[in-house]
Image (cartoon, rainbow, N blue to C red; front, side, top):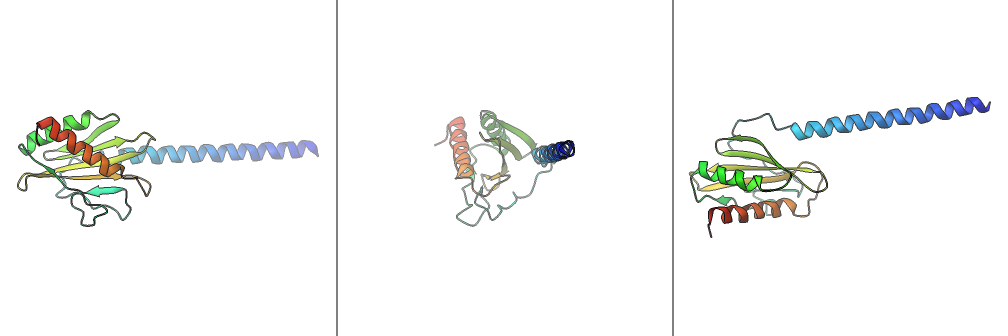
Length: 164
């Protein structure tokens, strides 16, 4: 009788380990897929996508004060501006440019706790601005991290070109 109970508890422990292993594999797969979800596109979007209803996104296209942030002012041609922005982005730790085409850059910024945020820049030479969007991939609240990031990029961009 005791040997049956012992085998039964071993089987249930083995089942729990198998379930845990399956959960780990599924989570890892989903995490890897989310890292590469937007890396394949090189087409220039006509406009950056809108922010979701959650407060973890800012965009220069947004209408609501919760998500609205001013675009960057261009002080150079679109081509020179995008080269400058690439240099500014490259100076940040844990960043990667995953797509670029003409007047568009899509970069990822990895935050300290391992989450990845998407940051996009779209130059509008006719308007003399670079539209921006910074959004957390997961979660609800970002404690203003995306807004702070864009303001730091703005400051470094101005410093890089010597603008006031």
